[in-house]
Length: 382
Image (cartoon, rainbow, N blue to C red; front, top):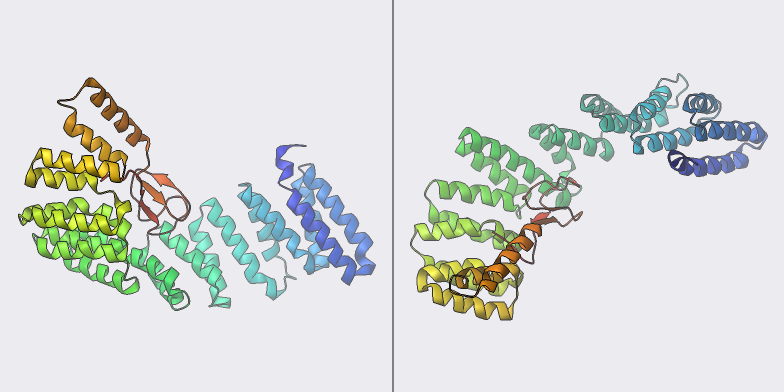
């Protein structure tokens, strides 16, 4: 049996189930319909979709309760990437003069999915909007419109739709809206419109008080403006929002403290932060601060102790980098080996779908969830 035909097995199961329903409610028509269904199924298995579709269209005209057959078939085609066939099925249904009104929105949604799969966002948008005309509370239509606007980077339209859903699921929709405002803030920063940047970032925080991205935008802007004290307050606020994200701003925090000549204060802050969150692995940063304030030997002593207490690749490599100049060749080789290991390691991972990357994304490229790509815990790099 060809591989493609295996994908039609679910359809066959669906057809048999529909036959059972027909048997229960339309006993007189059972023999005729059963025969036609199996004939259509046979055409499908022989890759004669045109003939199969003709049969199913005739059947649905006779009994609209069999429409689930078309939905099942359309989903199979869509899953297999055969969008043209899925579109043909749903366009054929929507064009039937005898189409019961109760099925209209369902068909429009399915056709919208077909267009999305084909990359025809404008057509899909029109269909989902049409669904909303009939059912303004359709979550399915609104969520799909959000995905379209997100794909097209039309953040204002995405916000308009998402705001309508916010009261129904603030914990889910709030972070989405916050990231849309952050996207607008990023655009404002590119244009040099600092006032608008701050406005959008604050709106983001109003929809999601834990939006790390908005806080980073505000802190980065404060640092760029030479307001190191304000930047430090904002960066440190991230610990309460999401401790793991502190890894993203450690270097910026260091620059601010250096700018204020407060390396010792930064050192104490790092020690306290590491004590509160051991999985952050701040050994390399702490060692660099110790080297500046107390000297290289003090940094070596600190790392030697910490590596025994809490082993990590980044800590070990940092320690070896201090020692390799005066050590045997083996230290240099070991340091090189660790460097290679770290290149193969993953710096960021999506906590929703497990997508791994060495580049930080606010929107996961794999599952399209916002704010779920976080620094990997073990062996973190900065």
